[in-house]
Length: 140
Image 1 (cartoon, one colour):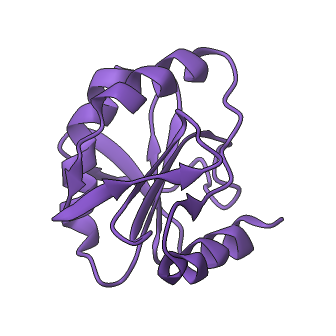
Image 2: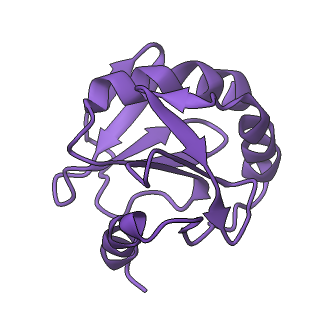
């Protein structure tokens, strides 16, 4: 399934109640340890939205609100990210904003790529700042 379709499906399922279905990534190498560590550092609230369950359960996925915010740790390098692209730095984390998917942001670190999808009902900058500290601690 293409990532854009998977993200759209995530938000369509948001109103169904219960756990939100999110396809967990399969991290490799150093990303496994970094993503496992990140799982324990993530906040219970992001931009005012409470954390909720996802299915299948995975230490590499976190969801807040009614699937308004979803994080997947250990995803592949963004296909559209060029070596010359500028990253937006927020609280010490470099973020790639995919121009073809305006609600998709990827933290670019030395050990793991962390993908965050943010519904337009949230301020992206606030969400990314809320997630920056745990990402730095887990991947630094």
